[in-house]
Length: 113
Image (cartoon, rainbow, N blue to C red):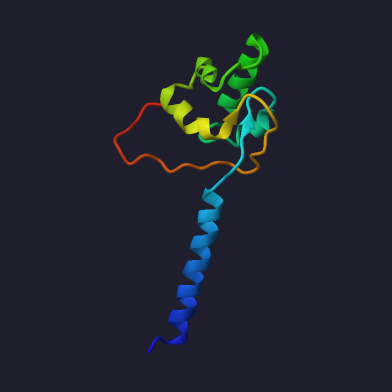
């Protein structure tokens, strides 16, 4: 027979796991043509420096015509684009409201970009 403490511990684990999974399932997009500094940082692996480079590039060159044009920004390469693509738009409203946190790859050290 399972004692009461075991049941409570299992219930806590299930509840905590559900919350953790919900936090990892960020939905929505950020419009890279209209997003501000804070909104851009909601994107996976985009911090203050990269957010500022995206804004600077946009101000110097005009709006991005397509998502893949963001690769012209220093620090964004093919692998970065693959991580960003599900959360980026060039038209419409920004609807992403929480920071997207992707798990780190388990391979050898990878280069940024």
